[in-house]
Length: 402
Ligand code: ADP
Image 1 (cartoon, protein in one colour):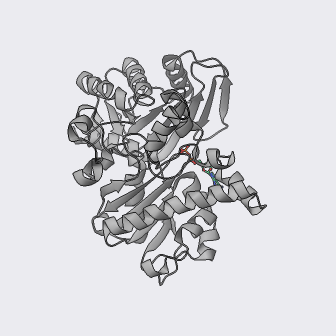
Image 2: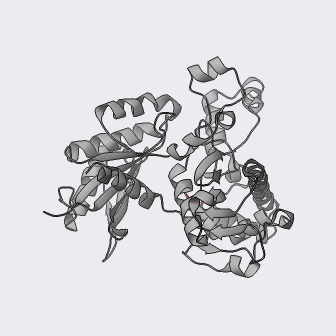
Image 3: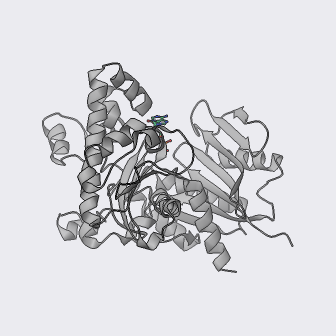
């Protein structure tokens, strides 16, 4: 009998589906791809096989079902169809798992109902994840489907850090608390940092800085998350590409009462027209650094505001952890923007934090230490791999059942 050792990872967004097929024996990507603009004009599927050329198809995808069927066909064309006996599971990224889902979970009707019950706290994300699950279950009803939650890694945050200081009854009624997001990335990076340093994850205190378009920080004590910067929604915390991050909630009342903006307009403002974009008109850190270098004041201010917030979280999580062994930079900005890393660590030698300019300037896709040898805190660049983490968690779960 053929052994089932492959996992298909699906990350279904509101108008896109990203996927990867991973061989778990050696972690090799057998195929990867992306369907964009589902239900919109300009639908596109880009499929990258392990070997050979990228295939790009431009065609309308009326819904997620059509998109996933097209993905299944692309995989089948490479001899990797969904009917393959080598497929062990499908791992789904699910953004919100609330308080209940603290670990990867095999999807049953009951689990799906519970994920649906969480839609009010993740209206932009969970509905798309649910459609992805439903379509995949219809395509392969016999195959284990595993939900891996963005919030799960953060469910260990102590109550005093997870609760907002508001009326308990109101908070409980509406399930208002800090959930945190990017959990699979924080978990993967915290572990990979320990590996890089040759240390036991259970003994390492790490501040993980996931700086992508969305950005979040977490404090991880001995492999356990004890605080994170995103909250009820992914709006809180760091300055991001288009999100404001931390803001006085009074701003919302002010914009509504005095500014006359509707709640939807304020939602759009804070989520899609704020952050770096709001400050300087660009949300790509490459462009901001280029403009700042050329003397553009708005870009310089945006860069400084971004770094200032980052430093506040580094300081805050230093105090939360008491002892910090490592700071790990990851995701698009964290892995690539050396000036952000240098500015984040500047003047923190008293805290044992320093970045070596030469090590920091090396460009590489590998995990690496960028602090000087003498520094008490190891500063590292650790590329994240959420898909591999989802695949590993899904595979570990279905194997346990054997
Ligand atoms: P997402 O959150 O969408 O997954 P990524 O982790 O891919 O995003 O990060 C995307 C962001 O990374 C871009 O918007 C850009 O600001 C930043 N970025 C990517 N490459 C570089 C680079 N070479 N230098 C600086 N910033 C970069």
